[in-house]
Every structure is written in structure tokens, then in C-alpha cells.
Length: 193
Image (tube, one colour):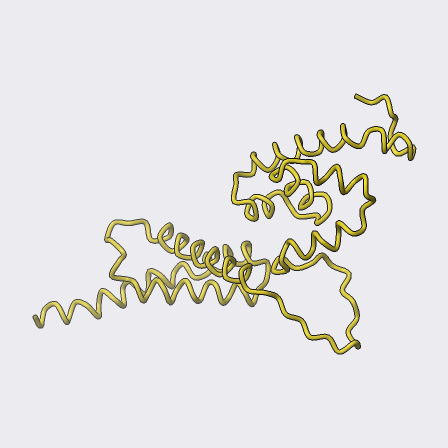
């Protein structure tokens, strides 16, 4: 028994040193994911804590860098899902200046869509409503909410290629449905096919 207990702290220190060697990499990847230095620090720190806490799950011979990056990715995804599910609350005093930037990702999509849909003319709303749900969601997120393809893929939980396909097909259906509408308003030629 005494041999095992004397080796355990050595292995733990050795493992801790291996983990800490990758701290800069973890921070860099976390910064790419979060796009915020403070959040990146928190994510990297959470990853290190989880790695040290569950070091007994690490198998010798496993590529530690890949193991750490998997922990980081899973931690980021779980935190993102938690934020999306949490309702956003804002208390305004009336003295705050309105922000010019895009809405944060934590704002529920249906709230943004309802506001944006109010700005559209009835013909455009009807054409959007007539689209299949997947196409409609992709078009609204890309063209009204100005989300990136990557963000749309995350929101729709589908591959990037699927998002691109849905956007192409949804936009084509919209273009066909709104051809006469655009021609009457001289937004496009009415004879376009």
C-alpha cells in the first residue's frame, strides 16, 4: 500500500505538469470559440479544473492535447446550451444609449424574428411563411438576423453544407414567389426566371 500512495502524488504532479504545458493552447482555442478574453480565460480554467479533477479517466498513451481539447469543446457547448435556454432579462432605467451592434446570440431567436417580421410588408411575410420551416429559418437567420453560416449551423444543429443548401433553395423559392411583387416596385425585372 505504501508504494501506491507514494506513486500517486508523483503521477498527479506529472499529470498536472502535462496539462499546464497546454494552457496557452487551451486559451487560444477558447478565445477563438468565445471571442472574448474574459470568457476565454474562464473556459480554459474550467477545462484545466475538469482535467485535473478527472485525471483518473485519462489513459496512459492517449494524446493529452486531444483529450484536453475535447474537454474544452464539450465545456463550451454545454455552457452555450445553458445560456441559450436561460431567458434574457434586461432592466432599463431609460438613460442607456441604444447599442448599434447586432443582437447578442443569447437573445431568443423568436423574439428577434417577431420584431424583424413586423418590418416586412405583408406580401414578403406571406412568402416567407409559405417556405418550408427549415428553409424559412435559414433565410431569416442569414438575411434578416445577419447570422454567419457557422452560427446558423449551430442553431439549426446541422452541417454547414445543409445550411448553404437550405439558404440557396429558400432564397430561390422566395425569389420565385416575390418576382411579380419586385417587378411592380421596380426592384427587379418581372421577366427574370
